[in-house]
Image (cartoon, rainbow, N blue to C red; front, side):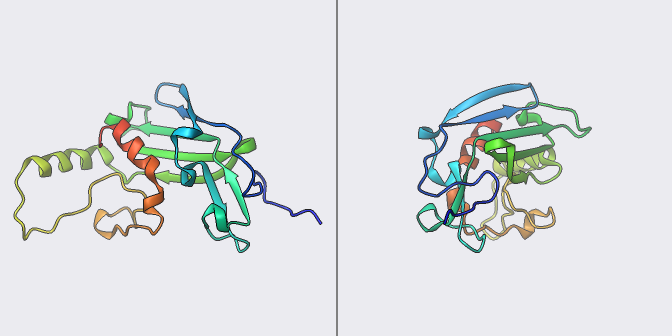
Length: 169
């Protein structure tokens, strides 16, 4: 009997199709990322037989990430360079433009960046509680004080690459 997978999914033992196309809508550019430069946890989204996220070795099926679309906009919704953006969103897709995941920065990212820079340049009292830095995925109700680090945070190494590209690294 042939195992059936969701659209865009494949057997977890099957190889990645080869590369990931990154699309940046602020300047309509594209870039091809070789998968050899990226961790397995970024190039595959894997799930167990119940549809829960799983590591590839324990997965029932995986969707290889083949497209990443980045949209960075200013306060008025106009496309801008990510370093100047008020909001940045990233969508990931598998083969056949199969939607996988969407992540968005907290609103007012540009203002939060300015506050973060001010906080870094001003000495902090050791007793003053520190709020998390901006541009962390999975914010709760868009408030930085509610941030909870998800268990898979260590698997999101591509965020470090994106943050460096945007100017946070």
